[in-house]
Image (cartoon, rainbow, N blue to C red; front, side, top):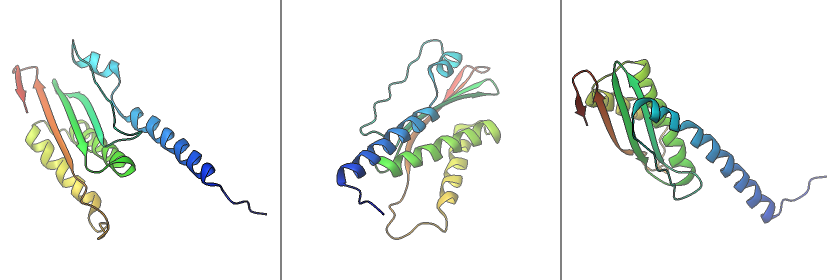
Length: 147
């Protein structure tokens, strides 16, 4: 015999799922030790408006260059949070795996891959997914900052 779920049961399940999503999303963000490895004096302030968010940051080092990316994906809630995870993965792939060094080339490649992610899947009811972001590269060898 099937029982009907009450509105309270549905709300409790949604809250449980959102809290799990929050743990997963925060697990994708760099930890304090990642910052400490790259920068002497640093911190990250992450205060999402909702349980999950389109805000993200990423740090990495490749070829004696330190990278910091800060972004905000369009939308709110679940869709923005999923976009932020996609963005983190694209930066990780582009910088660490593909070996792009220059910030303009990195952004161009991330933009290309981001658009490819939605090619043939966008529907009329889906808002255009985009990211507002900044990327900084500190070149330790030349002592230059690229933005």
